[in-house]
Each structure stands twice: as structure tokens, then as C-alpha cells.
Image (cartoon, rainbow, N blue to C red; front, side, top):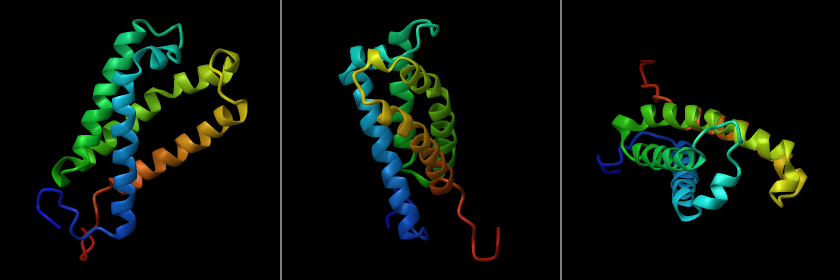
Length: 136
């Protein structure tokens, strides 16, 4: 592996986790800009400035995804993406409370919450600082 990505020494599973998290947030970040109106619809009404919320969260998704590419910033990016994932939970709950507004099957909205928990676990695990052979 190149020093650019610094994936050397990571297991294939951890690399796969990083790739999945990268793609999730990279594509999601792009969606924030490509489908601003659609993304704004899921912002709960009690959150001010929904357009700004969508754009700022999109920027943070893209920055977090980019941060995963470098070993030196991977842990910080993982922490940021973990916090960001928690921060968007109100949108998921809002959609679950008002499914008729979104045209998404109710079962998919219910499934979204455990999937978010799994995503949080994957972010934490894949971006954790790897242990060295001597335990440090």
C-alpha cells in the first residue's frame, strides 16, 4: 500500500469497512448538493435554516469521507462522521413520525434505525487506531 492511503498493516475487513464508510458518506455528501430540495424535506421543522443544515452536513460528509483516505486524519474523520451520524438522527425520527410525508415504506423507515446503529459501529471499528504488535 502507498503511504498516501496508509492502509498498510490493516486487515482486509478493516479496509473494506473504511471503503464502505467512505462510499456511504461520499455519495451521501454529493446527494446533499445534487438533491438539495429532497434533502431539505427530511429536516425536521424545528431545525432552523433547513437549506443551510443540508449544505453544511453535506460539506461535513464530504470532508469526513476525504479524511478517511489518509492515515493521519482517519481517526479524527471517524469521530467526526460518528458525531455527524448522531446529529442527523432527528431527521430519521421525524421521517418515522410522519411517514406519509415521504413516500417511503414504513418498514424501511423502521429498518433505518438499526442500520444507523450498525453504521455507527462500523465507523467506530474501522477508524479506530490500530493496535501495534506490542500492544500500543
